Image (cartoon, rainbow, N blue to C red; front, side, top):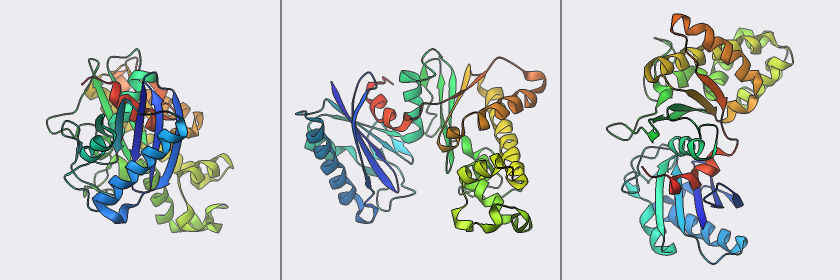
Length: 311
């Protein structure tokens, strides 16, 4: 059984061919034609799918999965709103794809899809209760309760990045102040560096860097190089993340917290101090909750996993 999967983002679209075991056979990536609206995106998906099927040397696929960076209605196959691509609000993206390929098409939010991938193929295989957190440009996640993805009353559960950690802190994209995403995401880390002008001037690394080029990866690298300002930013970020994670643990009492996204690629430079900080922040509410690294290719596998998961 061959499965075609799409990861539709504001900058790029990835398409993969895989199977039900989570094996990825072929992959292509293209720049998102986001200025062409509904028809442009749909035509792009169809052409990429046709190209990939040909490259894989197969006649057709059995199922198609589409994951999208934004709120979706997975039951109807509709994009509810589109923060990064104009013109896709309330758009049923699955209809035209289904008609062209003549197979069932599944749609899911990207963070929820990565959560499902962890359950089927990753670190959460043996957990019935876990929380997945993606730490990237923003912060999102997904929640499994009793072996079932928890979606909430409006299908929008898992917006973990929008819990307030720092009242009266910086304004988040959602409009609130001090959200976890605003202070501990990759974008939030870079903003905190750029806003501390005096510290940047004294930094041996950041003082020579274009502010537009500063990102989380460079901040962690600067810390490893001994830059004290970078050390402070990373320590603050880990503290904020630990507070957020302990809030999640106290609410859901999961077996594990699984962390993915670009920041997770920092490996033990992130995970070791984060585990220590979480343990300290739990105070008298300590319990055995594992903090684990997510699949490296969770997004690709998410496009496959959503076709295999029975809600």
